[in-house]
Image (cartoon, rainbow, N blue to C red; front, top):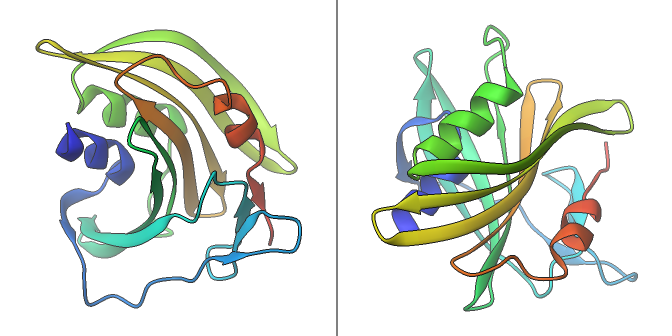
Length: 175
């Protein structure tokens, strides 16, 4: 299930592989208890400090690095990831959502709607994913800010936690 979760985080990245040589962005606890990533240009209320990693892939023959911030409570995962895509790529958020979820298995969409965050357009969704006998619940938001795609999500093999919407709604693009 862990690899399938990373496929969701990779979104459209092809041939993803963990990139341990990449300089990782920083995340710091702000005075108001949110976590801020100056390089990622976002702020969010993670339950605890997330781990940071990066995944490298190719899109249209160009290197794309997907930065992943994940807090794993043992019961659920809270994640923010972002990637800067080539200017030549026409980014379709619906396609990103569908490919990410379908890479995990059979998708039963429970809810989806268009959302915005200031001037940035996005999608919000909640789904159940079944892969063989394993089931997962996932909720998320995807935003497009220029050619940067942000994906905020909560993932669990049980019912989504009560704080799911609070976590998703706490995300702010700072630049």
